[in-house]
Image 1 (tube, rainbow, N blue to C red):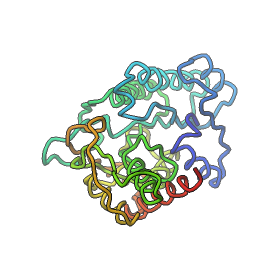
Image 2 (image 1 turned 135 degrees about the vertical axis):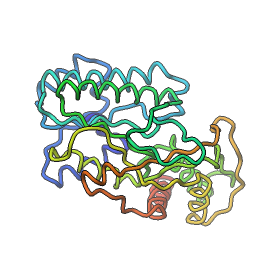
Image 3 (image 1 turned 120 degrees about the vertical axis):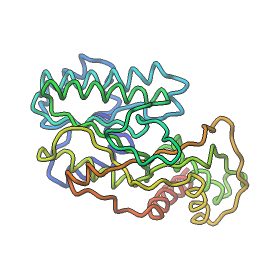
Length: 294
């Protein structure tokens, strides 16, 4: 597993171990931009499966560093796929992309399916779409590649570079008296499809099953949620009523993105089970604990 110490990796590894898998996780000690290093590791391990999580995963950071995002996200995927094809040709490869690959939805459009055209808008989304296309090429050549397109997900341990974690961190600091009662936000009118990280991990576990056909799969709730409504719930849970201030650096145009996970459900029986209110409670609890410990 690449990116093993990242947000999703830290939730996925215990589930894999509990299921009886032996996991060799690597993070920053393996630079996925280094093709020789990636090939050497895959040759040494000869894995039955590869979960490629390593990525520059922030849309915001990609805007200021598009070349670096491309090196990590596209070139990294290239190296993993090439190494798998050469040294572990029977391995199942979970290539983790993003619902961002589809771009924003047209007004009134149905949720994105795997057949929807990809119109990536950010540098991050473009790198993921290109890696997805590369995965499709390797699949056509015989490699067992599953291209996964998860929509927004959150949970304990997520960086505050991401919207729900950012809100929760600020709310925890305000509630603890660590900052003024002003919470800074971007565009609250956008609609996004949010999942709990535990539901996303459950989807990845099912997609590692070789009985599940290879191909592309959305991981999504199918429910568009207004960003402002998520903030309202977090503030209610935190018991605070701060002033909301729009930070121009955080603002992107209001749009919508929602996914259809019908293909995943048909192939594996997967359904999301964690209510959004519980997810937000867990994220807030995590940040409150971090603030107390700081």
